[in-house]
Picture 1 (cartoon, rainbow, N blue to C red):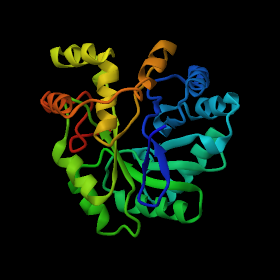
Picture 2: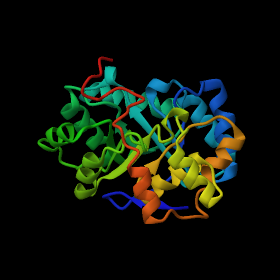
Picture 3: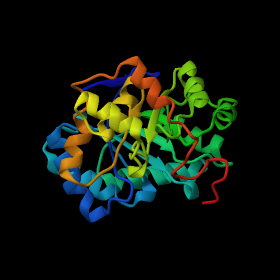
Length: 268
């Protein structure tokens, strides 16, 4: 399993299972199957309303808790120092875990600084192994650094061949901050001549090519699926490598197309 080393030395698996929109009563079985296949990184969030099922799936898998990397996030309505601490306790209770591997601010909001202070406290208390942010543009990150005592270790944001965000990626990589991509498969928008051509060349699927591109770029990536065959397909990306020309061809697909909201324009 390829991992990425965070600023504090904690290693995060380079591929994980995203659980957005997987219902609480279904997610446990999906996680059990994913862990059988080899996944060791599960991503959830308070707003997904499936943390309970995620915890259940981890326990049902029979794999030691220390081998599973679990991410969850504080939602916008809970931002602030005390409210974040309470939200964390609720997430921990729903998950049924003794600690979280990675806790993130889900979206940038006016209370980022107070929320981050709560994450720092949780980290210093050993309740989380690493802390970071999600959906932060560089200007949000710069503002957070004005008051942060601990630099965020990772930023999870929308990133895929149609939205390469090269300026942001370079900014975070120069900071030593790991980049994590959500919606890496563009919500299934894989009908591309470039992707199909490269997939045929390597004997892989377009989805596998895109996920391997994430690996080659040094990202962490969290594709989501509930189907066993897709779980297997998405995880079967460690037996080939893209050459430089093919990486550049995929880079060239960028059209700044978002499948989700722009963090500067969110209203929720």
